[in-house]
Image (cartoon, rainbow, N blue to C red; front, side, top):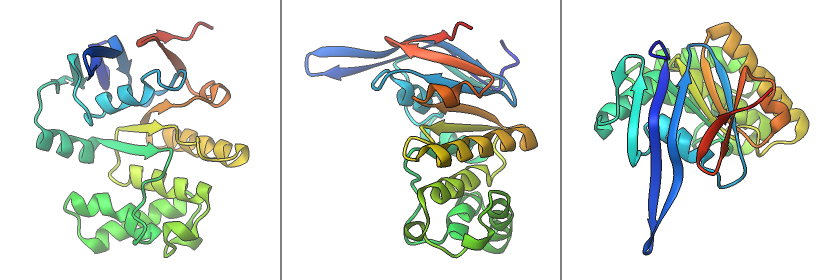
Length: 228
């Protein structure tokens, strides 16, 4: 699938644990098309987060290849990977990872300022996104003053601020109750439709995963397409 936006070929990851070698992922082949929403499900410890970190260039594979569009990224150095992530990827985690000393507006503006935008321009764009995710009344609030669902909305706005082509979401609703979790999933579905942003969503929630276009199951280090 050479027209894929993000793909990997025979990607494996092993760790040394004392005298033993532990294999977490085995020869993973995966391709994400532009605008596609894919869920990756599996038991705790199955390697879901490891796979997401490899696809996002946050960790190095033991073997295999990683591609973005027609570029092979397997041997890119850390600074080039960091620049690529800033320009092309958004990240959403189970725990929001917002900076506690900054407001919602400042947290969302931060990636744009890192990319070289002026603070005025960055905050203008950040405000637009916070309004879009329903937080126009929370711009100046710090994370501790927000509910769990509101913090995740800020995190999603931050993930979108540099207009990424791909968002990687690691258990984005894992810390929320059912109603808030459903609200966050619906927001991601809406943003996918509005902005044609592709998503890879790691989750243990099968009911929510089934709302996405495709479900992949990670079991014993091997990725399987869910059988309908």
